[in-house]
Image (cartoon, rainbow, N blue to C red):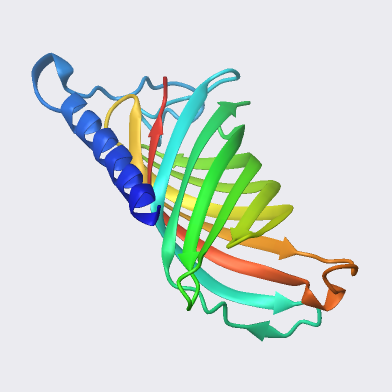
Length: 216
């Protein structure tokens, strides 16, 4: 299952990379700078100016780094998890030149010492503020939503926060490539009953991803 996940991520990234470099090669298909305009046309000549209704699609794939678990008492312990994989698909809609709202479907996996696989699948709404200096963009973002955690036969459903930042470069008028770092803060809270409240903890993970953005 892990191998299939990694193969899919590699194929998606390879396909996007091949497409973008094909668009940027030679003749009539050579990339053109996005249209200039707006208040930033001086220092950001050639920069894309987004308006209400513009959209973007995002693909991210990379490395998941388990950091630590924190108990409700504040005590911190290691995760005993291996490095893993992280990926997500996202859609953003611009409200103005810098601010956008969107939705993100993510996935993360890592291995426990006995080779059991921890899966997390979050669905988050996101708000993003983007700083631009053409041909570069630097978004900062916050995602909040729900997360499904699966380990062997155990399923936990709870909240998640995903703040992060990225750095991108336009390689054509439609495509950007770059890197992004996303912090996953994953509360796992119990209220007694079959699982005592003392088992509550807060997971902390870091995702480092190669990222592509497509502007239709």
